[in-house]
Image (cartoon, rainbow, N blue to C red; front, side, top):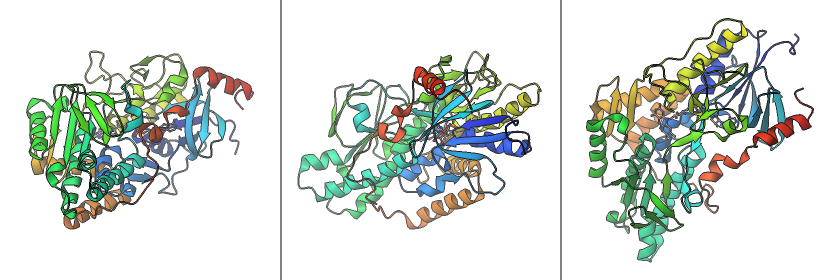
Length: 456
Ligand SMILES: Cc1cc2nc3c(=O)[nH]c(=O)nc-3n(C[C@H](O)[C@H](O)[C@H](O)COP(=O)(O)OP(=O)(O)OC[C@H]3O[C@@H](n4cnc5c(N)ncnc54)[C@H](O)[C@@H]3O)c2cc1C
């Protein structure tokens, strides 16, 4: 078979958008119609919405890492690495493999789905002292870190040290931050019973946000219910507040309060992957500006979707763009595959339209608030909808079984609060987990592509 004449489709990123796209391409294209290649640093698709449950130990990390090699039917070639630049003119993607080799991968069609990274601001000490909640390693690390604070506070005779180890700050009142604070507070609340020398009242969780409301997309009534649940559980919520300064042992809030803490979790929004900036193309708030068909106008064969693209939200209208959610990313993944195939076969592409189905927020245990299809739910019904939704959205039956078994096991046997000692001696923070400094500038991409004689 002559592989050179077949169009080459390169998909960047194996998240919700990328994996859905690849699976659909595999299903709908015959093997001799096109070669499909996927670039991804990891061998799994991460089910991000359940990350707070990994941090709190309800789920094991493996349960939300869905294998990319589960079936023999999966015929896509996988390059283990990350794209660090794209040269649209030469149609070459520059990739750093997991062994740090830099390779040029030529393509005819490229689907950009590298997702997003944690959005940070120019706040002194922030990137050096904050953790994010975006990767599996981060979630596992935070769990170890929180348990080690209890261990160290328990061993310490110094009341000042104890106080700083037993206070925890989460910044970001969106669903990621709220779920993280809620799930981790449940962890420390349950764990402290195993530390008879520690006074439980010293443990304090702070959830802060610069906005006047938590999760405004839930609406006033449901947002207040979520706030009420968290306050009842002793989480201190400060709205209209952010961080002025972060240090190794304390955090200063913008309202002047200085909180002794060694745990700052930053979940104040996301920005598109730095890969997008390497294209030198038009962006909207950092996301690649694409047409409703998710292609880049003026550049043949370039598509972008998910958190990294500004896809017009036609269901909402008024120039809105789709929010960065898994709900949109996975549907866009399927849709973009259809558009790539249409373009390959010389057919018309279709615009992406999806009406938001609502939001589910799991606050741990039986606490939850959900708004499926506009219906406001609280408590057990909300929790059933939240878990049912996530469970059904997991892609493989093995992942579904792992998650369900973990939920049942946790409900029956609880947690053992084991600290694994994972990276215990080397502090790792936001920038270490998200590899934000790995990317090339548009000029470096050009140099790299031209220097190696252009596309092969
Ligand atoms: C804690 C948390 C809770 C959330 N809860 C919800 C929820 O309840 N409901 C909801 O709808 N959404 C939720 N989201 C948002 C949702 O997870 C994202 O919108 C969704 O993952 C976006 O899909 P994506 O495919 O664009 O990106 P991702 O799913 O993030 O996938 C991007 C992939 O690209 C890979 N990648 C990154 N850079 C490169 C590169 N340079 N080269 C190659 N590969 C690369 C990454 O490793 C990753 O595999 C939550 C997010 C978080 C963090």
